[in-house]
Length: 449
Image (cartoon, rainbow, N blue to C red; front, side, top):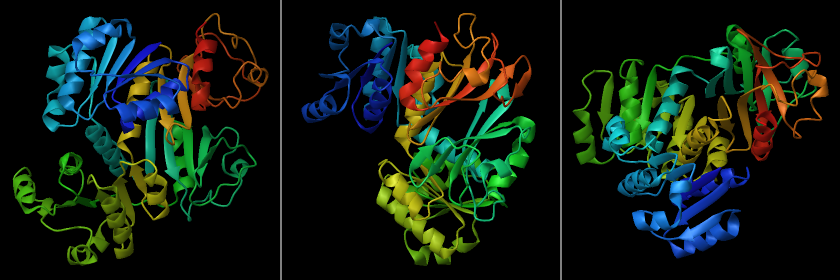
């Protein structure tokens, strides 16, 4: 697969890193000589110095032969123009990253007018992820597989959870309809087995039959209260989108904005009384205490400044807010933020990369999601008539699969189930697999011969 990425910033670099590890043919176009040299040294990808907004330059690179063109510079107009040019030159699919709200709100028009397949907004994707967390308290990642029969939920094990301190085999018995596919513990990711002891603070990724999910979550989450009172720091695009999403779903929202002109401008956007715009700096204990944040269920820090977001999150926890979400632009700060008490750290580059990876894989993989900055993936693949796994017992399939790949669930007809060693893999079965990112290319070759 031939992929062009315009822009070698945080998003473009991370995307190129993930894709180049999977043996795709990746070309990065970067207009900064120093950045171009750095990427060339760090990645197994072709890195070209040039202006990606020039149609003639793109034509000279044979962009028309690309399977996918992703424009993810920091300039919306450049991304839209380049993606449209690539599509016009013959690229099979084109993706444009945009930051400005009008481009995203009117994306349904731009993708038709410019013939761009996907217009992605990091801010919109981040806002959606945080909003999903509010609607599903305690759930860090939420996905569906096998036409909704299998649900994925990543949760952090609470100290009062029944699972904390117990072996996995003691918690989930055969026939439970649930499997723990991945655990993240102190920054390390691994696939557990029955002898793994679940610890408080673990991030456990559950794969469960829909009807068994509620029982499984109760074992790993403990008691989780609903989120009804939310404080948001920052009336930028992310903060506003979250506030608008919550107008009809929670009891009260306080939106903090320290810029008085901005605060006055956005206050008129809200018609319902449960949304209040506060012209104060939310990074001070005095502001939090005067606005009684100790009575709130969630504090969300959404500014462009990672340090401010982390500091405000720590203060919110000290004041008494039980849960904190923060937008973290620099990925290295996310683990630090979580150690300091941030419940949910969302990095824009990761949510964009995950969306693009789904586009890349859609022809060969039914569904996929990336976990823990790309260290692990959950993906769904169908068994073809020529698959080497066809008619094999699960216990005999390990020699055919790349190391570290686990078959988690099977969808057969209208029935989804957790397999065991005696399960025979059949043609047209849909398998949900757990794999490390470096194994994805081998999996695609194995299942689509």
